[in-house]
Amino acid sequence: MRKIITFVAAVSILAGSVRAQTADSLTVSAPDYEKIAAEVADMASPYYYPRLIGRYEKGDTTLTLDDFRHLYYGYPEQPGYKPLLSSPYADSLDRAFGKKTRLEADDYRRVAGFAREILKEEPFSMRDLNVLAFAYQMLDEPERAAVQMFKIRGIMEAIRSTGTGLKEESPWYVIYMRDAEDVLNLIGARFTKFIILTRSVEYAPVYNMPDKRNKGYYFDYSEVYKRRPDYLDELPKQKRKFEVNPLYNPRSKQNILPR
Image (cartoon, rainbow, N blue to C red; front, side):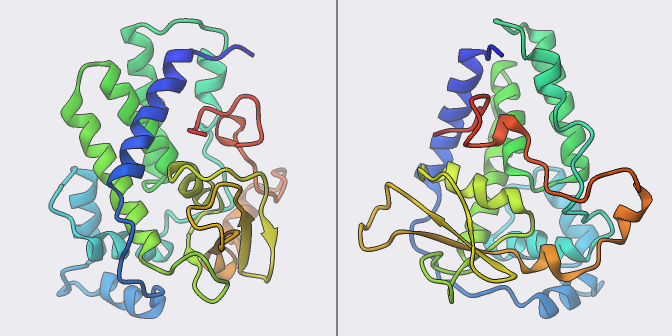
């Protein structure tokens, strides 16, 4: 299936901006999920979730790293957190635009529309924030594009603040399986697979590590498996598996994420 070259190039450029501006060194600490859950549920807390997510959705660029840590790691306590489900819009871009060789303004508006629908269900999906930023850029709306890039940088920094990522004992914590792939793509890591080490930690060998003494990155998925996925009972015919959209699968020829 043919892909639009300008689309791939623009997404890569946007991701490069994140890679360049994300801090290389942060004070790291694993997320204290119990403490975060208490703070985001406390109406007197500056991290009270309804107010915090409202600021995020409005594009408040004064959000701090601590705000993003509470947004991202507080989300598993929210009713919308369903990490084993794929959005019904996930393949919409491929179906709608897969055979096109050129996009017009109306097409970019549809791209933005699909991305916004996905983000209603998965507000911290970096790949879809990236696509939305691209669409806004192509629609000559740089300020709206910049807000999406700010969100991506905030999510990236929150994840990278949870560990070095270089040891099983100091992994990067993610709340969706796909977030590990997105982090690796956005930092320009070359990888082909994930290796399961424990029930909560996986390891991705990387071929272009900055320091050759390190061989890859570790990710903790404990929140994904923490709760019984009761919401899947609502869809008895759905296969209980992780589905990877080929547009965002680094092993797929259809992949549009930066390499």
